[in-house]
Image (spheres, one colour):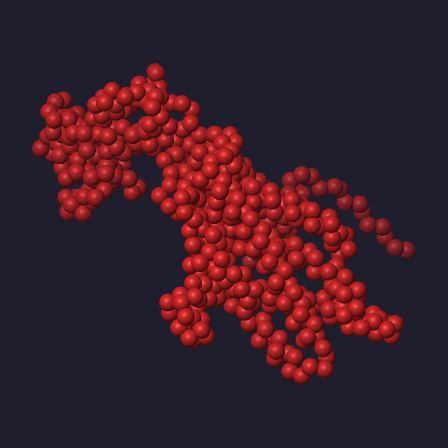
Length: 534
């Protein structure tokens, strides 16, 4: 007769916690240590970011960083959130590198962010007053000691009248502090490192730019010490009235007011720059279609972008398909060797190949002109029409191996029985290709053709490395040329030239996104390629 086991009492809360700790301790200790190490790295990065954001007073982003850090720690220290442990890294990277980028680009498109408008209003006022400062003729001489804290330089000043110690930096106005004195001059203060004269002499360039506000009122001027030993008072020729929110030029009497467009502007339209970043609504989009100096090149570049993308897809596809049909013949000898040779252009980095082609097409000493055409001066990259032809030829050389591989794989996926049945019904090779192979091929290749169109629509590397968008248009306000496509035009508007307009460039980016997304959606619906694949 078997004995019945005595029923065990249920574990209480403390016993269950002890059991979980014991199970965790009995598991692989190496993985636990690795998890703790990785979380420690994440927390350290988040803590550093929190300090930086706190100093910049970016409260919204600071709150997001803290919330995400707490959530990540909760997920990975929890024993129940197993699916979330696998999804969290991908979701975080998706939000940072995709969602945030798209949202921020959209936001910039509705601002005047760019050269002369890249800071806050307070920063613009400080910069304007500092850039127009002149030394006061009867200024007192202030004994100065140069100090440093975490890479920031400051001036420890001794007031010649009261003998008090004052400390300030480019960001903080002078304020009274407790300091150590030697010979009646303040020489050290807690929290700051006093720099020796030998070090000060090597910082002449930095000290010439260092301007310490004399007080919270910007109209009181600032203190400067180019030699790092004696400071003098500098006062701006511009005077800011905070109550009226105007700036007055004391030398000319001109009055500049805030018109809401991110800069102080006089009645005659003259602006004081730098200004500040502000929201301008749809002004950037309106400029793109109403400003003649922008609209003209924008229309030309847009037309060329469509022509370039369509011709690139068509030429690479048909050449790749032709070669795939030829090398799909089982009776051809050395097919594998030929295939390897054909895909070599695809194996090399595209930007390096474009640079090589740019050298070969050089009008003066390029290989094509000097060797193939016997020293002819053919302007492959400097004539507007030939430059476009050159871009299409080089892109054909770079793109046909990809289409060759795609078409080769699609052709090999077509059952041979279909071809044999067509031949038995009396179809010739052209009919077999046009009525059987091509329709079956397009079912597989159509989504790839759409993605190839989207890629060539934004094929920045080829354009920039081969022609840099040239030759340039005449009489335009933005630095674009005949072979520029929209994405290279955006790059030039944002990052080249003396005036960089990030707001306008972001507006162009939004337009590109809308165009590509619309074409892709329509193309997928028309071809019904996705439904066929699914």
